Image 1: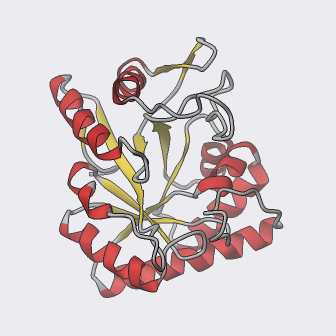
Image 2: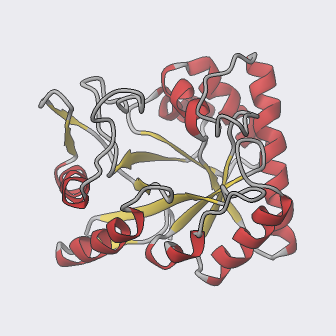
Length: 252
C-alpha cells in the first residue's frame, strides 16, 4: 500500500498581514510552521501550534532567511556557520512553544530561498542538517527530492522525507522552475492533481519541457497562500482514497 504525507507551510501571518491557516488544517497531515524570521511572530507561532495540535498534525520548523520584506524568497549571502546559527535559533523558537503545549517537534523544512539554495549547495544543506542533528537527531528533514538537501541528510545520518510539489513545475534536472519564470506554478487544480498522482503512483514527473524523469515522493507540499490550496487539498484526499493511497504523517 502506498503512503504519502500532505504538508503545508503555515504560521506565515505577521502584524496586520493575515493568512487563515485553520481552513486547510483538516485536509493536511503535517504543518511546517514559520519561526519568525521570514514570517510569523510570537503570537502567530503560539496560536498556530495550538490549532495544529487540535487537528493532530505533525509539527515541524520552517526556518528561513531573516527577510520579512522579501518573505524569505530573496537569496541572501551567509557563511555556513551563520546558516547553522540562523537555523538553530529558529528551531529553538518553535520548540519552546511546542514544549509548553506538550506537543512533539517532528521535522524541519527550510523555507523559500534557503530551501532552493540548499537544494543545489551541499555545504549550505550540511549547515542546516548540522543544526538539526545537534538539536535533535530524530528530527526529519523535509527536502526537495533528488536534491543536495537529501544528500546532506544521508551524509549526516539523519532521517529525511523526499518532498515533491503538486502545484509547482519541474526542470529537466528535477528542480523547481523558479517563480520568476513563466509557467512555474500550476494554477489549475486538475493539473496539480494529475501531477501529484503521477509522482506518487509511477515515481516520475513530467518536466516543463515534456521530459519524464524519476522522482521519489514521501511528502507533498501544498502552499497555503495559493488560490487553489484548500480545493487542492480536498481533491487530493479524495483522489488518493480512490486509488488506495494512504494519507498520513511521516513515521505514523
